[in-house]
Image (cartoon, rainbow, N blue to C red; front, side, top):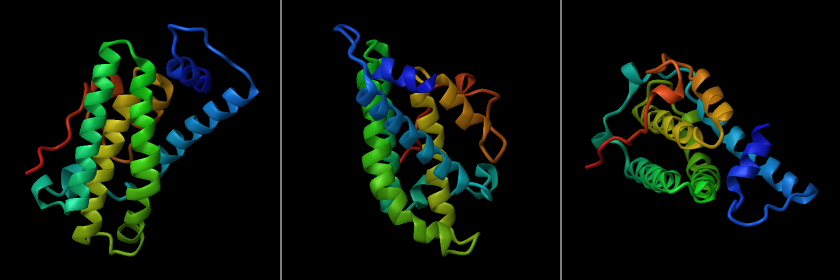
Length: 178
């Protein structure tokens, strides 16, 4: 059902919407990429509680601050697109962030900090701080178009969620970066 929602939301609804085996396969692949990235984010937060372990934004390494800035720009773009009922543009911005910036770059280079560093090492906690912000931002950005996926992400946070539902959390802002 979410794959069909993704197809509908990512289509230009002002024109005829094409559908076929290849389009459904591409849509399923895009959905799987979003879901698997969310699983990676959640899985690497298993021993992290933002209330206890979060690193202040001004103490984050430059790469981490950069990624939070990318997330904020994506949130701003998605919100503007949703306000204009341009669902295709909103989802495209989120997919671009998830596929290009997170999966193909940031998450790949962060694996050493996540897997090799000691659990309470500052570098690892800084990375987990960013992952917690990313999972919050991605869930919120997906919620208007893919509500089941967004709620599934929210319900599987490995720490006490700030609200019962992603829909009660409001639109996030990334930490102020100095």
